[in-house]
Length: 237
Image (cartoon, rainbow, N blue to C red; front, side, top):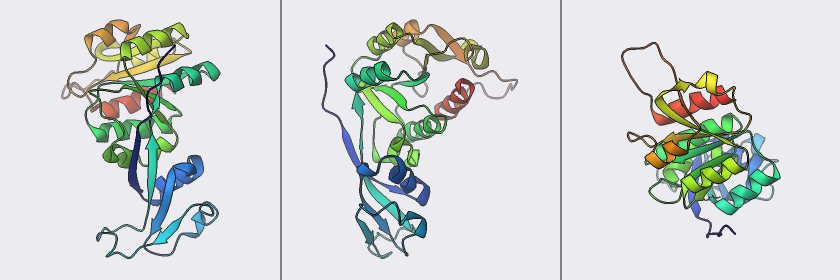
């Protein structure tokens, strides 16, 4: 039996109408309060009936030039939740992260995942940035749609997903073009490596195929991991 670990919950603020609306639409139970400096936008009236709201002056909001924001509790799930979700309704694409360090990259990747309908993001629970306020803020509401599943052993999780019929697609500059790889498998896990180091050796050996983003440019040999992930998800979409 896979052990269940305590879920990690992060309390933070999200800013902007679009980010607040994402949580109101898809995960209103995560919102503890919606704050606004000016009058509450009419488009929100039907969404905040059962959610506390508070009008805050600019001085009380620490001088920040913002008109609407919310306090939210965002919870990461565990590997038991992941296996249950995959067994219940197997998604076509799962995204896995191999020890990312930058919370802004995590947030940007989550935003791309949510945009392309990828709702399962898997990451190791150690030596990996998780649900920090910076990551949640950068995601602009994406964690209302996509869930982060933390696992104790990423290689073991990838092998268990293989048993469920998933093919593991790693990312590497020496791989096959991603548009070619994308058409080969109906169920796939896309795994991206950390900033600078890329995929770890054990993770790399677990992959079934390596994919790259082809380019004709001779000036740069790589992309920021969040940008590269977005392009790969587009090809898998």
